[in-house]
Image (cartoon, rainbow, N blue to C red; front, side, top):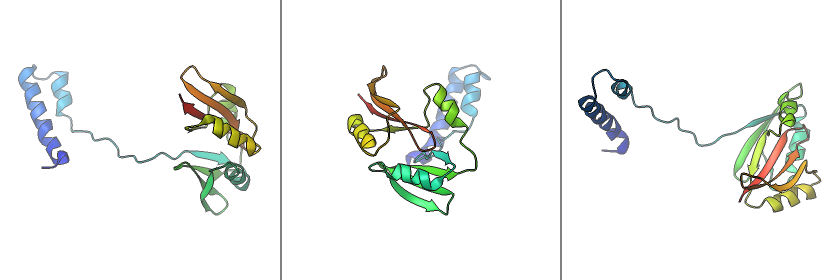
Length: 161
């Protein structure tokens, strides 16, 4: 019997044991009577950034070493690939309202984890993108720097130490 097939039987055994060892009607018994909840299968996460100029945003990102255009659908949607990860760009008519909110309190739109933050910072500056915050060590043991994209989205690059 597979592990998945054995789960309902094991659940029934746990419920029976709980009923024998605890008074009837307790919260434990009631909780054990609920069906088994399996985790939602997720194999990835793809964030989306809004842009008022898709072509300019594609140029910005693909000018960064290692960033490539994964796909483009007409003039309104695109995917950018980097390091085995992907994020999407969607053309909209108005500036992303989150840009100003994120800029207020050191929040971020995307965080790119890198095994070598110094090399990433060097590559970003060589591509002509100014650092909003230079390479620095954080209290949570990362080495990070911050840039903004062509629309003003705040992008962090970090290396766990």
